[in-house]
Each structure stands twice: as structure tokens, then as C-alpha cells.
Length: 55
Image 1 (cartoon, rainbow, N blue to C red):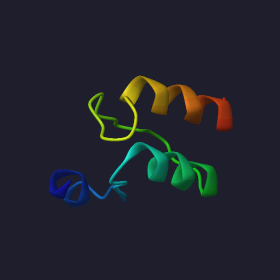
Image 2: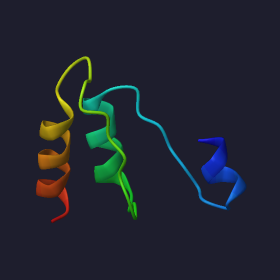
Image 3: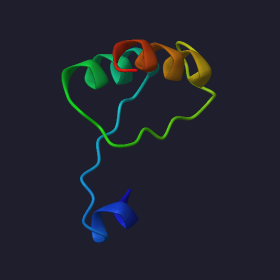
């Protein structure tokens, strides 16, 4: 994430899919980078859920 910070981007990290979805619902984000291998759900489901929150 340091590379993004050096370029002036504000970043946030969620430690699992559920926390990421919850955080996404609270605020606006321009882009989401998501690993497809997560502990509590796969990345595809995370992306589908956040698309439901904000199409």
C-alpha cells in the first residue's frame, strides 16, 4: 500500500470479506482491489455483494 500512499492515494484495508463489505457500505470508494482467496468468503462473492450495495 505504500506505493499508493506515495502517489497521494488514500487507502484502507479490510482483513476479511465481511469487514470489507461493511466498510464499503459506510463510505464511497473509487476502486476496490480484492483477493479472490479470503478466509470467510471468496473474492467473487465480495465483489457481487458490494455491487448490490452500490451498483
